[in-house]
Amino acid sequence: MQFADWKDWLQQRIKPLVQRSSNTIKTISNRTYNFVREHKKQTAIVAGAAVMLTSVTAYAEYYYESNIIPIYHVVVNGKEIGVVNSPEVIHNWASTKLEAEKAKSGMTLKITDYITFQEERVYKGAYDNEAAIAALSDVANLKVEATKIVVNGEVVGYAPDKQTADAVMAKLKAKYAGIPLDAGKKQAVAAASVPVSKSDELKQVRFKEDVKLESDTVPAAQVLSEDKLEELLSKGTFKQVTHTVVEGDTISGIAQKYGIRQKDIYANNPGVTEDTVLQLDQQLNVTAIRPLVTVQVVEQVEREEEIPYVVQTRNNDKLPKGETKVVQNGQEGKKLVQYEVVKENGQVSERKVLKQEVLEQPVAQIVERGTKVIPSRGTGRFSWPASGYISSGFGQRWGRMHKGIDIAGSGSVKAADNGRVVSAGWNGDYGNCVIIDHGNGMQTLYGHMRSIKVNVGDVVAQGKAIGVMGSTGDSTGVHLHFEVLRNGSPQNPMRYLSR
Image (cartoon, rainbow, N blue to C red; front, side, top):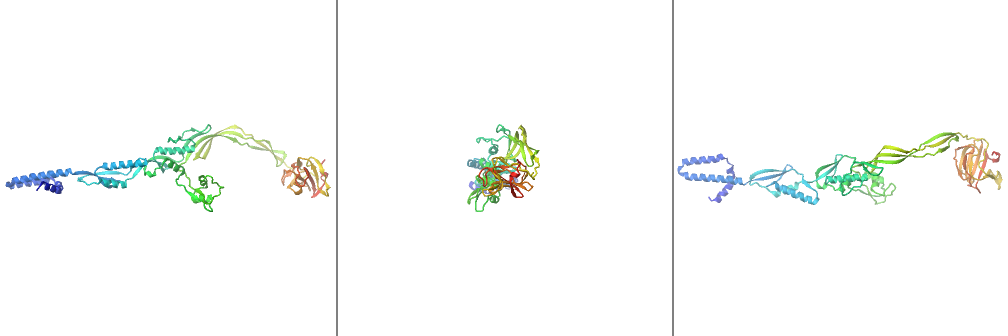
């Protein structure tokens, strides 16, 4: 048998031979020894055969051992996806993949899957690096290291890193605190006191909600830029909803349709107010703005305020009942008040007085109230209703009856006696006219007045001013037309006026 044939024979048989125990080799040796004893003549031949067998066995063992190699089963999240000849195959692929993704997105990613390797040493072990990498590419979960923003225990968004998240928080605080924020520096707004003006002091800027920043790994698509994250936190949404006005639309109806408040529509659409007339096909922004975080700004402010004066009323028995007279004008005082004001997203939610100092005491206003009861029944004796001279008397004039007297002059017109006003206003030819019933069958009439100072139902005392002389109605000049009526019949006033 040629050596080449021996080699083929060994490759076909070597594995079963090597797996036999050493006892089998010893058995063959013993049998060979016995065979030599029994067949002495063939000793040389058998000895040669034994030597050859020992050599073949040793070569078989060497060849088998030299072809045993380690292979690695790749297990992803507990499931085998392929076999490679070295873990470095997977490590190198992962490193190259992550660098490529970072070059595209600018973010540092990592593979979050749990990858392990199970080593196995086998004779001429089979592996396929390319197939394992292809399988891993299909299942690999690439995520980015990010900072999640948690509001009251709920994740509301992801920032690329803590520095970006801090910058967004600082911008929101600065927006409502009125503090300029250097856009080039991602700095947080301190909660300590920061002077705002000479009399106002910013004590604290904080979030009303419990806001936490935590590290996490998420798909890159979920990570928001600084501007987008600020928009989300301040508005609660990215989606803008638009409504096209149709016939019959009203602000209240549109608000109800989209589940928002009317003031949301006014806020979203500058120029639209309660008085706006909606036009067909008009576009309205009906996005519901619901901030995810509330910035609370605590300020300490000082304001100079007025102290209202009190009105003190006292009785005056010499003043007719129903009349009042101011005997001392009131004057407002001044005080300096220090408040602690809490604003939520720019709107005042709480105001508390810390202290106040009176700068100027107010001066009370004193009013006297008349208690003198004026009887509505006249005395029967009339006083002159106005100052002046008689320009026309009682009786026939110009072919008709002149029912009273005319007193030419100027100034006030006064009640001739106690009584109750039964008419006050325009009265045909009399112009502005007042009639007083004196409760004793007597009435007096005052005509052509420029203005009237009493109302129907008023009880007036004798000498009380009821108006001002004028020339209203059928009149040729400023004067008072004065009549006296008894049981409805005109009387000559001169018979009743006291001299």
